[in-house]
Image 1 (cartoon, rainbow, N blue to C red):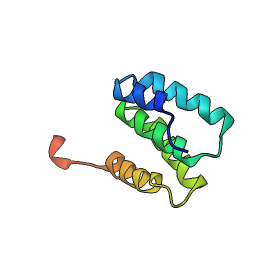
Image 2: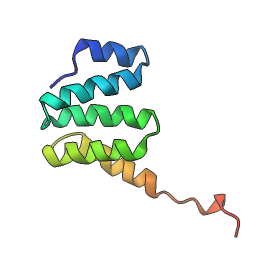
Image 3: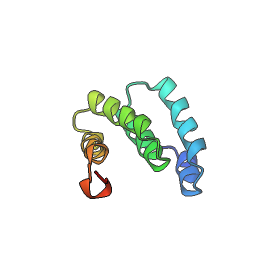
Image 4: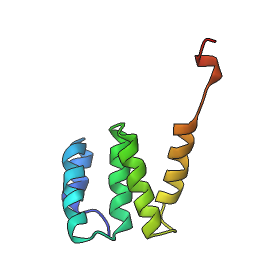
Length: 90
């Protein structure tokens, strides 16, 4: 499913929280739509809600192994596991 124009306008106007709520409402009627989970995951990531984003990417990947959420999930996990020794003092 492509996002309805109303949600696209919310995103364009940086009303991310409202867009997340709107996608959540769509998911109530289409709980197996991987693209909606992927899109909501991207919005959660923008809000620095990493765990919620990863959960949505994971759900999208489970529903559709060809989803771009698979790559997003892989990259998110790499970011979360990054460890920079130079930032820590022994």
